[in-house]
Length: 105
Image 1: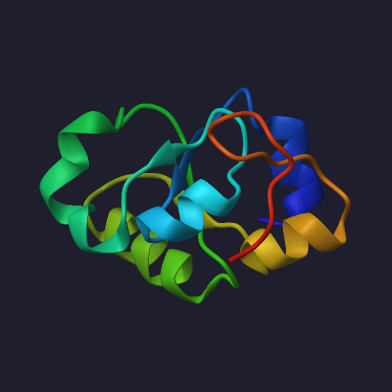
Image 2: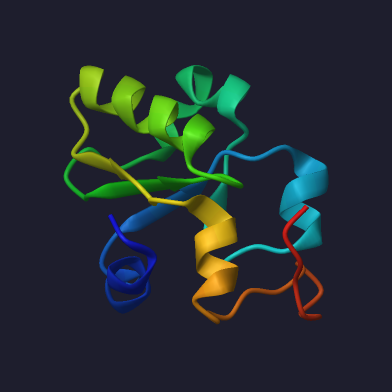
């Protein structure tokens, strides 16, 4: 999914940020759920199987792998193409958990 479409649909999907904690704290999309990539298999119960899932990471590589894994588990999952780098390049809003302007780490 392209980041502009993700931004438009962000209230209708489950957005899962699979980056590491230091990346998440540097800047995240409002409303995203933080589940580091290594924890996705053990935290599937936190996701609603009836709602679409979009995964995001820094560049789209890890989140692409996570989306593929989720599809194999029966979720309607897509990857945020280009990740947080594309989100930032598009000028879309993201912040630290404290509400300060975010950066891509």
